Image 1 (spheres, helix red, strand yellow):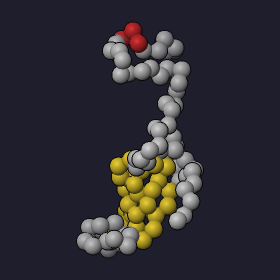
Image 2: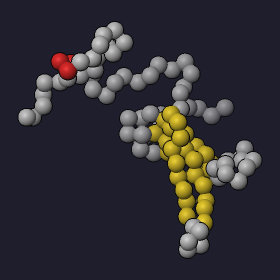
Image 3: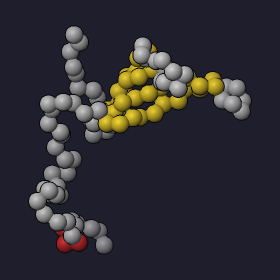
Image 4: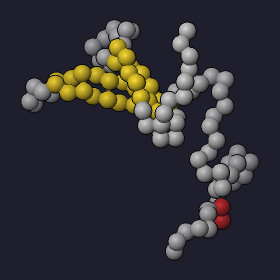
Length: 100
């Protein structure tokens, strides 16, 4: 079995979709890591423009991939992060570092 590796943020890979059964299924499937490193399903399809007849590639990001048994990553900004599950968030909870 292939080893898992940490994908670099802002990159992705797609492979031929061996499970394609319908025309609307993606030609290639894979994963994409956003700038935070969160993984998303990636779908790539070859299409032909109905207007000009030019062939093009359509790319779409799907739902986030959830790794079973892996803890979610920490918040990006731990200074302003707050445990939202235990208290109500109100106007007074906004950061005070606004420039105006």
